[in-house]
Length: 344
Ligand SMILES: NC(=O)c1ccc[n+]([C@@H]2O[C@H](COP(=O)([O-])OP(=O)(O)OC[C@H]3O[C@@H](n4cnc5c(N)ncnc54)[C@H](OP(=O)(O)O)[C@@H]3O)[C@@H](O)[C@H]2O)c1
Image (cartoon, rainbow, N blue to C red):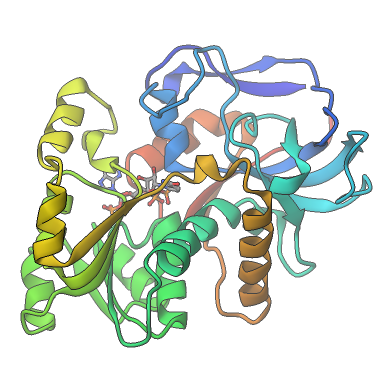
């Protein structure tokens, strides 16, 4: 098969398409002919070697995919061998075939395309886990979502709106804020045109917000932490700010981002009545019941028209380098998908 390898840690150019053996499914695994690869910012951070647990190169990256089951391991009960599925593979989806544990894959609804299937699970599960399970977002609460026009961001806007929160969204261009508005944000802020923290203070009459979904970190963390009202919950799920404007990643950027987020002193959480959660969806492995329950609820919402993924741009497989660059350089709106040819 053809597979994309990270040949060494670095920028998009370290990616190379090479021949690789088609893997054999283990007892609980399913072999899938990949139709679409869903790109995630974690693929970028991992490619730089900065994501915890990233293997040493050469390795095949890729957290998620959609495709067709072609073979199943002897203990697989969830699939029979012909279904259209989407799944969370943790690694390996940048290829014509990928292995996935049966418990971290699910059927694609009939009306959902392969492109949408590859755009669904990681973003939706992240938003669900943060807002529903951790923050327990309630009716009337104020939710602030950063990088709101991205994959996870748009998922948060839709779930926040569904849970009857008042949703504040920040993004880096007017085009992105307009998409955020159309996906449910009540208030949108282009942070390059005005200081988001002042805007949120103004819009809330100084109250601030009850829940923050922050995947940017660094200075954005510092400002947003001050916006969190008493009894507020802060969700920290990524530090995109450790990459530079041209999409490179350097030690000094990481150090800067971390400096801005100096460890929070736990007793101060008592006095300020605030809480903070970190989470890493990668650790969902080993929680198959949780995956099943969350995916079922999310698919119910999808079927009811409450949530949908936005496929922002589709690249062909041989343009994988361009696809990574596009996401890394913050051009994307919604999800970036790479389509894998099925013939040949
Ligand atoms: N912990 C978890 O389990 C988990 C799961 C999924 C995702 N994540 C994290 O959530 C974040 C969003 O992931 P995603 O895949 O949905 O990506 P995404 O939001 O679609 O794309 C990244 C966006 O982040 C914003 N951004 C802000 N500062 C940036 C910088 N210095 N460099 C690049 N982008 C920057 C940009 O939007 P603007 O132009 O609007 O600023 C950019 O478009 C990432 O940090 C990712 O690692 C974490």
